[in-house]
Amino acid sequence: MTVTTSPTTTVVTKGDRTVRRSARRVEPIYYLFLLPSLVLFTLAITVPGLVGIFFSMTDSIGLGDWQFIGLTNYIALFSDPAILQSYLFTAGFAIATVIVVNVLAFLLAVGLTARIRFKTGLRTIFVIPMVISGIIIAYVFNFLFSNSIPAAGTSLGLPWLETSLLANPDLAWVAIVIVTAWQAIPGTLLIYIAGLLSVPGDVYEAADLDGASKTQQLFRITVPLVAGYVVINVILGFKGFLNAYDIIVGLTNGGPGTATRSVAMTIIAGFNGGDYAYQMANATIFFVVAVLISLLQLSLTRGRNSF
Image (cartoon, rainbow, N blue to C red):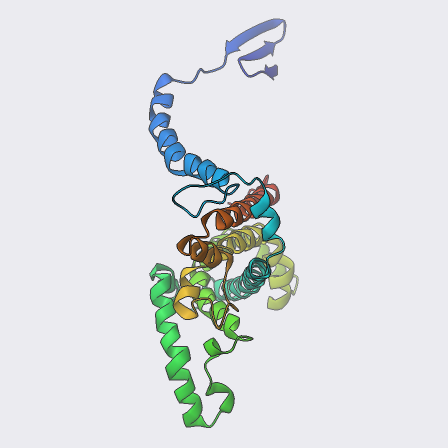
């Protein structure tokens, strides 16, 4: 028996007999249910986005008269040191946070899927930071970095702890990475736990019989088998950290100076400061970067059957 398919017809050949079957047509009710979502998405996302791209090629300040100036804003962006610095900070911050989050989350996942007591309760505890608002977390850690830790450093006679990290333009990003990782690890942890639980136990039993140590099992069995989860976590994490805003606002508000100002903060500050068209051009470029990362994610995860 042979089967030949086309977009509209399926041909099944059984011996000397050929049977043609029409492909199932799409029910009209499908479009009826799709229409409201499509209209809402178009009005809330697509239309505002196209309007924003148009105004990025004007000199508008967000209200009043404006003139069309073409690609002038885009050309100016690439020679603006403040814009370039925000992109460099955001990219560096995202890379550092992705590494910290994935390494710690993977190690925690390995521990929380091992044969230990109270692992279900421990999983619940480790997930708690994920459900707390980022701005609340930022304000709590702001108090710790600005008051509690320097006070502890003074009491213990440790000069390097007496000054807040948030006041140091060279080290403030470290505090932001720590706080962002503290909130982001639980989500990444859950994905790694799902990946580790999908690995067949027979594989580890065979490795034990062959005399493989726990370290060898980790790097030669566990890591290769959850590689798909690693790729997904890295891409999703990097894309998410590029949009960092609330935690940075709560910790440093982009300071000291502009040392920790992210792209999102730069765009919003421009909107509030009457620099609408210029920052809309910045937002358009940032959107293109996000789309390219999304396409990279699709190309790397296409065909993987880890989930």
